[in-house]
Length: 514
Image (cartoon, rainbow, N blue to C red; front, top):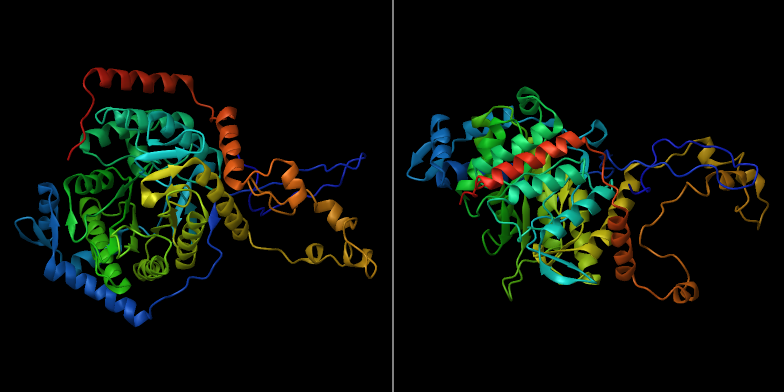
C-alpha cells in the first residue's frame, strides 16, 4: 500500500537513543469525507425549475425503452406506454425517490475496504472503459488482458482509489469469455469493491455467482447488501437500450449497486446550455432510478451525470472546461435536491500526459469536489476523452488525489500544534525551528510524502538525471508491478473460481446481449 495519507490519529513517540526517527507516518485514505462546502451555480428556484422540467419531460415527452421487460415493469407501475415510448408520471418518480436509499455500504473483501455511499463521502476511481492503454515504454496499444491486470494491481496499490473500475477493455479476450477474465483479475489481484459489466443477464448472473462463491457468501448474504456495482449509461437523448435496462433490473433484483450515468455532451446529444443539458440528464437519471425501484424498492442506486461540452469546431468531446465545471456544480445541486449519493467525473481530452492533461483533469476534479460528488470516476489516468488510460498519468494524478485526501483530514490547532511550550519558547529572535522539540518530534511524520513530485533544487535535480515527472512516474508504476503485492487469498477459493471458469469456458461461455 502507499504510505501517504491523512492522519486522523498520530502516535507520537520520542526519538531513540541514536537520534533517529522512531516512528513512521501513519495514514488512512480509505474512508474520506469531502471537506469543502458545496458550491452552487444556480439559485434554488432555478434548480427546482430544472427538476420540475425534467419531470415534465418524462411525463409529456417520455423515454424510449428498448427492452420489453422494462416496458412491462414501467407499465405495471403506472406508466403510459405507446409502443417503445414510456411516459413516466411524476408520482412514479417521487415514489421511487422515496424508496431509493440515501446511504448504503458497498461491501469489499474485508471490512476495512468497505465503501460508504452517501452525500458527503468522497470516493475516487481511476479512468474506466478505455479501449486503449499507453505508457512511455510500450506506447499506445489496444487494451489487453495484461494491461487490465497491471492496471488493477496499480489501482490496488493506492488506498486513495477505493473502487475498481474496468480501466481498459481487454480486447484479446473473446467477448463471450471476457467476464470470466475480468472477475478473476479483480478478485485475485485486489480486495476492493469490484465492478461487473452489464452485458446481458447470463454474464451478470455468472459474475454474481463467481463473486458470491469467492467471498464465501450465501444467497441471502449476497442480496442483502451490495458487493459489486455496475455503470449504466442512457443513450441520450431519452433512450434506454436493452443491455442497460436489463442491467438496471438484474442489479436491482439482486440488491447490487447501479451507478446511473447519462452521458450528455452539450450541443451534440444534449441542449447546448448547461441548464438544458443537465435537465435532460436529470430526467434520464430519474427514469433509470424509477426502473430500479419498480424492480425492487430499496435497491441501492447512485445518481450520476457525465456532462460536458463539445468542441464546436470539430465536434470532439472536451473535458476540464469551465462548462464541464459548471455542469458538475448543477448536477450536485440536483443530487442534493433529491438527496441521493451521486457520481461525477474528471478526465482529459489531451492526447498525452502533458500540461493540458493535468490542467483539464484538475479543473474537472475541482468541479466534482466543489459540487460535493460522492464518487469521482476518471479521476486518474484518463486521456483522449476516454480512448486511453495512461500508466504515467495514473501515477501523476494519484499524487493530486493523495494531496486532496490530506485535506480531508483537516488540521488540528491544539496546544501541542500551536507549540508555545515545544516550539515558540525554544527559539530566539532571528533563530530557526529546525531543532525545536516540536520539529524533532514531527519531522518525519508531519508533511505529505510525494510519490512522484521532486522537490530538489535545480542542481540536485540535474545531477540525478534531470528526469521529468512522466519519466519518474514510469519508474513508480514499474516498481509497483515488480513488487506484486497482491492481497492474500484462500487457495481453495481461487482453485474453485478457476475450475468454474474453465468449465464454463469449455461449455461455450456466455455471449453478451446487444
